[in-house]
Amino acid sequence: MKNYYVSIIRRCELAYIRSELEAFGLIPMEGRLIRLLKDRSSSQEELGETLDIDKGRIARTIYALEEKGLVCRITNDKNRRQKLVSLTERGNEIYGTICRIYEAWDDICYEGFTDEEREQNHEFIKRISQNVLEYKKENGGKKNG
Image 1 (cartoon, helix red, strand yellow):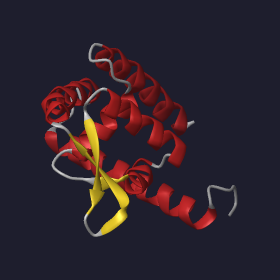
Image 2 (tube, rainbow, N blue to C red):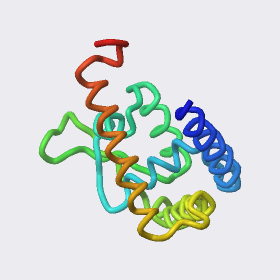
Image 3 (cartoon, rainbow, N blue to C red):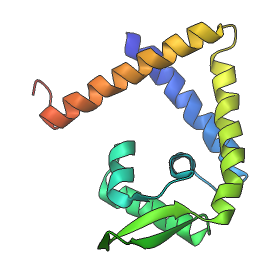
């Protein structure tokens, strides 16, 4: 039954983020990618692994952000066959707005919590996600390994 509460939080979060990002012509996955790319370049593969999404979806999302002028792909100097994705000037400009949207959501979620409680919950969620990703890596996401 505990997962029921996580499911409620996730559905409400997606609805909130989606409605806020719509004003900028973005979807939640695009907002997540923009946040990941702040002050760094990453390969498509690294971004897909970090977000735990398949190659096709990450490619489509990056293409959509390229079309919107928010990211660009450049050839990796160390591996000429690899393209690195980074934010454009316009992508950097919208980054702050996207962060404020996510911060507003956090404020909604943590209403009445102390800073210590917020941090403690963050650490628990981080540990849970690491456990889940490790399980998936070892078992391919299959039930009972």
